[in-house]
Image (cartoon, rainbow, N blue to C red; front, side, top):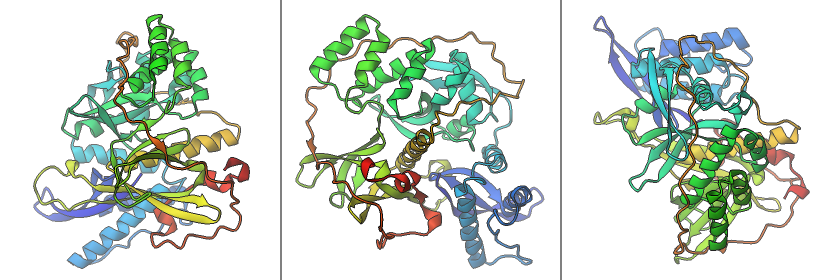
Length: 468
C-alpha cells in the first residue's frame, strides 16, 4: 500500500479553537483525517507492544505554536513515519495499526456503527446482499458473503473482495483489492458514486488451485461465472474453434470441463488493466498491461503504430515501487475524489548483470503492485511447501444477522461470438537467455531510491539459472 500525507488542514474545535489535521491518503485517495495527538497515541501503543528497537522514531512534540515551515516539516516527518510502519512486516500487519486506520476511516467519514445492507457483486453481475455492520472489516464482509453463498469455510481464503469502477460501455476497471485496514462499507459509500462497486473474485494465480475450488459446488459455480465473464470481456484469448468447443460445453452445462478447457487458453487467470503509458521499449508508448502466470504482460503500441507483445516475469524483478503525486485541494470538490498521478516502476533483469527500470503510468498502478506482491507471496508459500492460507478466524460479533436464505450462484448466459476484428499481436522478443544472479551490483540508475521506498522481491533473491 502507498501511504502519503500530501496536505494538512486547519480545523475548528468545538470550543472555537483551531488545530492542524493531517490527511492520510492510501493509494492516492483520502483514507482518514487525524491529529498529531492521535498519531502519537498510535506510536505509544506500538512502542509498548513491540519496543523502541522495532518502532521507528516519532516526530517530537513542540512547546510553542508551529510556524508554517514547521508544520510542513512535521507533515513530511509523519508521512515517513507512517510509510515506515506500514512497510515493516510486523508493525504493518499488526492489529494495533490496522484497527487505528479502520477507526480513523470511520470517524473521518462520520459514519456511525450500525447494521446495514451491503451489495457485493459476482462476476456474472449477480448481487449478493449481506447484513453487516458499518464497522465490519474486509475479512468480516468476505466471510459474510461467502457464508451466504454457502461456500465451504476452507475455501474462503481462495477468494477476495475487490473495489471496481464501472465504465460507460458496460466494462469495469479494478481500483484495488480491499485490505485489512479498511471498512468495505465505508470505502465504497464514501466515494459517493454508484460507479464504484465491490466484487467477489478468486485471489490466487496458480490455476492448479482451481482443483481445490471445483470440489465444491458453490466454488465451481463462482469459478465458472468468473471464467465466462473474463472470456466475454476479451481478457482470455479464444479462437473460433475454441469458442465452438466452449459453447458446446456450456450448452451441456459441463462447467468443470469448460474451466479445464479455458485453463489451456492464453491469458487464463489474468487481470487486465485499462490502457496506459509506459517507457518501454520507448518513452510514451501506449500499453495494455495484464497480470497473471507470475508475470506482467505488455501489449505495446509503438510510435510507428506497430503492435508488439512481451512479458516481464515477477521472478526477474529485483524490486518495485509506486509513486504518486496528489494535487493540493483548491477547496472545490470532495477530497475523496482527488485523483493522483500514479506510477509503478520495477527494476528488471534484462540480461546478464544488467538491471533496467521500467515505468508504467496508470491510475491502476496500486492494483498492479498488489498483484505483483500477491504473486511473490504465492511463489514463496509454494517454495516452502505451504498452500493457500485458510481463513480460520471466526466472527465474534453477534450483532450481525445471517438470517437470509443461502443464495445460489446463477449460471451465466451463453457466450457471445468472439470479436473477429481483434488484431493479432506480434511477439516483442524471444525468451531472454539464462543468466547468473551472482555478482550483480546495485543499479546505478538515477531512479534509485532508499530502502524505505520500494518493495524488495524475495522471489528474485532465491532463483537460480534454472528458473530463468
